[in-house]
Image 1 (cartoon, one colour):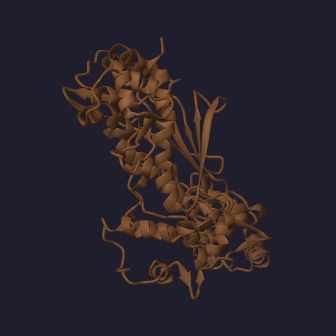
Image 2 (cartoon, one colour):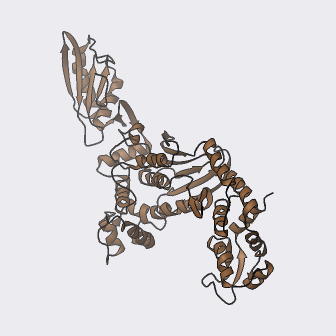
Image 3 (cartoon, one colour):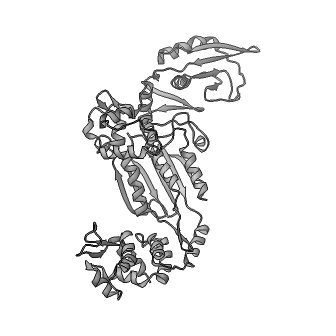
Length: 492
């Protein structure tokens, strides 16, 4: 029988093997055979009598535990079995802690040691009371959004008429009159006041990490981060390829929305909040998310690609996210990411252990597939201004990248000249009558709806009185995104 998670073979005894005893005691227990080779075959122990006296004493004196040490016989060849029971308290070997994971014996240090010691006391990091926090540190708007989000799944208990603190009690985020850390992470007004790295850093790179174009930092509680990261990705970091079928516009996301959302949720729920911030990198050909905190002890990477049990690092945060409908509790997060990429006909994502954390990478289609899409775009013709605007919108804020270059070829050939004229003329506040006179069309409501309203809705033209389109003194002016689009239109 080969070595397993709870079986270890050693041909002779060394005191260094006390680490293995400690590792078994801190995990699920196990048996160490002294006098067997790596294949499990017995090799006679000449000093078995002395070891039968020494080994139990060394275990007791160095760790304070007792193991069942037995002399075994295989057709006259003697060997020893050391049966180690799992302990509910943390066991150390001369001040060091070891843990058996798979067939490896790990020394626990840093964050892993802290989490291990908390777990042995029946706690996790997010279940600990935050002594410096009170109900004034909770953002009620975030809590309201959380409750609103939960209505679709119907998992939340009734909260009507309850105070903010009573709702947190329902979510098991309080202890007596105090708030737990999970409450601050989920709904805090300023979680960084308590935990400095509750944030997501998003960087836009070209081919590698040495070529940073721009970046954004999203700070706040989990409910805010979950929404704001997606907003930032859509507005600044990703483009949305658009294809037209007759009069119908079809938008294809650069990466599957379900995969992106699941990656972010996994990072927020499973990260260690005592470590570094979440890092999201957007490259020309891929997107990655990294969070500090390795896999739960006993779980390996390959198991993430198949059905596995859910073992969240922060169970209080995970339970709240489940009640809101953000996640399920069946360990399907990584499977959802893989399946979403498969359905979008993208390569299988990479899931790696890196720098003390988990890295998930989504890949775009190959250059050949992308060029086919580009060639299709170049052959498009447009039948109305709405189609033109929709196609231009994918590159309006990114006039320096490849997608923008490809779009500009179509734009220059097809864009309605009056759209460009409106953007050029409205460089300072101007009345509609003066604007339409300048482009030689009548000042009628139907022309406002046809030419101005689409540009306003897309954020390329702003109104001086945005709350009332028909204000008698209404004026119009190009916005920053409109200026970027104008640059795109004007490319040679």
